[in-house]
Length: 139
Image 1 (cartoon, one colour):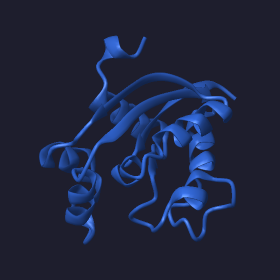
Image 2 (tube, rainbow, N blue to C red):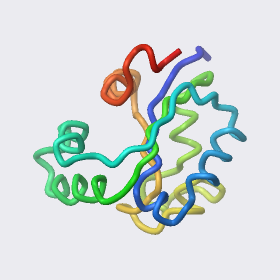
Image 3 (tube, rainbow, N blue to C red):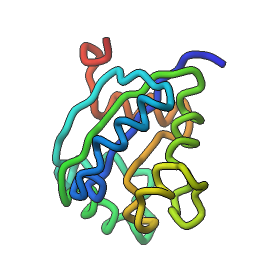
């Protein structure tokens, strides 16, 4: 497998429950290198731009409101096969359907409050990384 980068978010529900340390620990244990990390509170416009692909879906407004509801951690992760590896580490979107030992199974409380986000493809990762980080932040 090739070395690649993916984008991840520790979402407001996880940060509000002070789970960012546990999630960062799991990232390290899974063998990722954290290339970049920042904390922020998204504006409505930033959330809407990031989730624009979902604009026509009925949950779009609720998703944007949730992502603006508190602090997030935005991360760039690097590993061999990072995109699929991060998705495996997170688990299924619905914590009830996620495999035991995954972040979403162990720490998530619902489909909406599932603690983490991750890119699903190389093109998505490229867009999402560039949305939050400038080139000089990715050294």
